[in-house]
Image (cartoon, rainbow, N blue to C red):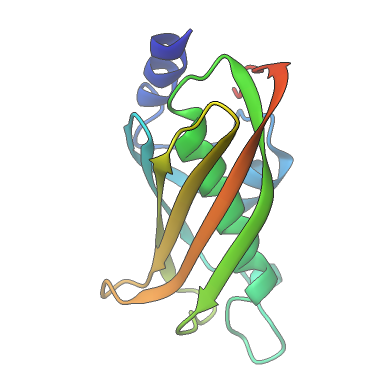
Length: 148
């Protein structure tokens, strides 16, 4: 199972995640740039419906990106049971204006039997860190599902 999930994601490198069961991920329309076990890199554009009243990436959208990418990084490990987010801690450092291209990286820091820890960074085109998030995931005990 583990290798199968990783290799299925690896085959999607360079493509937009359009065939995913994650409705949020599908809506974000991110490009899967790199997949390694426990690590992913994606890129996406800041669209108008992702912005706050002043035209920057909304904090809630940043949180959704981080939650999605932390989960995807964890999913790339190919665990046999489904883990879900129990918390998400975010530092908002800078904003991203409408139309800008952003990059997000997700990394598994610890893959535990019960609780796992992940992190996500969102960067602008110049490589400046815009957002940093850490998340804990809990093992539900339910069989993992096919993401794509």
